[in-house]
Image 1 (cartoon, one colour):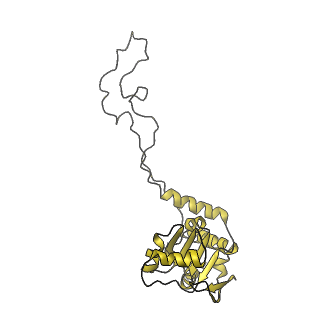
Image 2 (spheres, one colour):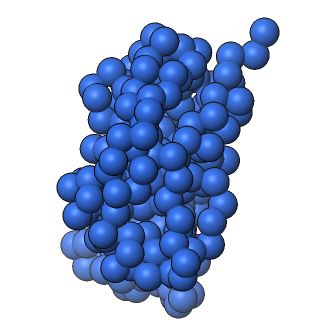
Image 3 (spheres, helix red, strand yellow):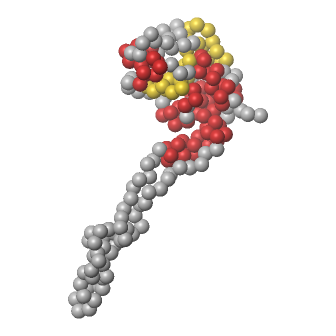
Length: 209
C-alpha cells in the first residue's frame, strides 16, 4: 500500500497516510485511460459544423445557360456543386461526437491515472486546506509559495472558499471528489489532495466485488 507523508497547508509534516492499493496502487492500464480521455474530449465537441447542400442554397431556379451550342458542360442550376456559389457535396453536417463509456471503464481509468501519479511521486496529501474567505492570494500562498507547485490539480471536498480562491489562480484547478476525471489528472503535473478527499476517493472508486 502506498504510504505518503501528510502535511498541513504550511507544508509542515504532521504524520503519514496509508492509501488504498485498489485506488492509488492499481495496475496502470494506459489503453483504457487513452480510450476514456479520448471519449471525454470527443464529448466536449459541439458538432455544429455545417455546410449547405444544393437544396439548401437560395436561388438556382433557372437554367444558367442553354443546353446546347455554348461549348460548356450542360448545367441545370446555378446552385449545383459544380457552379460558383453552389452547394457543397459531402460537407460536414451537425452530429454528436459522444462515445459510449460504461461507468466501470471510467472508474478504471481514474484508478489508473491516480496510481500513475502516485507511482511518479506527484501526489501531495494535506490534512486540510481552509480559508476564512475566498482570496486568490491565500491559495497562491499555499500552492505556489508553500509547496512550490505549478500545473496542480487540487482535489478536495466541497468548500466554496477554496473553490473561489483557486479559480483565478493560473496553472491551478480545483475539482471535488465527485468531479475527478482522467483528463484533468493527466493534464496537471501535480495532485494536491486533502486527507478527507483521499478517503472519499478510496470509497468512491474502490473495485466493486
